[in-house]
Image 1 (tube, helix red, strand yellow):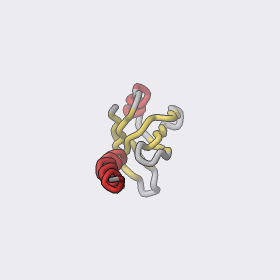
Image 2 (cartoon, one colour):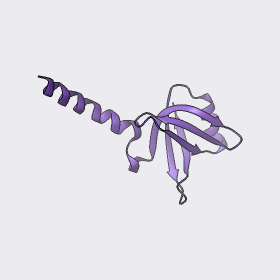
Image 3 (cartoon, rainbow, N blue to C red):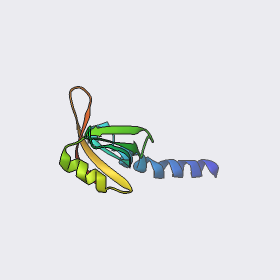
Image 4 (cartoon, one colour):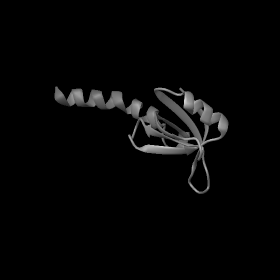
Amino acid sequence: MSVKAFIAVALLSAPLAVFACGGKESKMHLGQVVNIDAKARTFTIRDAETSRPVTFKANDEVMAGVKKASGTVQVNFEENADGALNAVGVTF
C-alpha cells in the first residue's frame, strides 16, 4: 500500500514542479520577491521549484509592477548572451 501512495504523490507533484519554473525552455519563473534594488534596477525572487534565489534586471515599467507585488509572482524573462536574465513581464 505504501508503494501506491508514493507513486500517487510523485505523479501528483510532478506537474506542480514543472509549473513552478516551467523548465529551462519556458523562460518563466514563479516565486516570492525577496529583494528589490531600485537603483540597480534588479529584483530577486525565491524560485518556487528550487527555493534558490533568481535575480532579474528590469526596466522601469517592470520594476513598478514588482514593487506592487505580494505573494507569488510569475516572471517572464529573456536571457542575454552574457547569461543575465532580463524580466520582460511580471504578473501576480
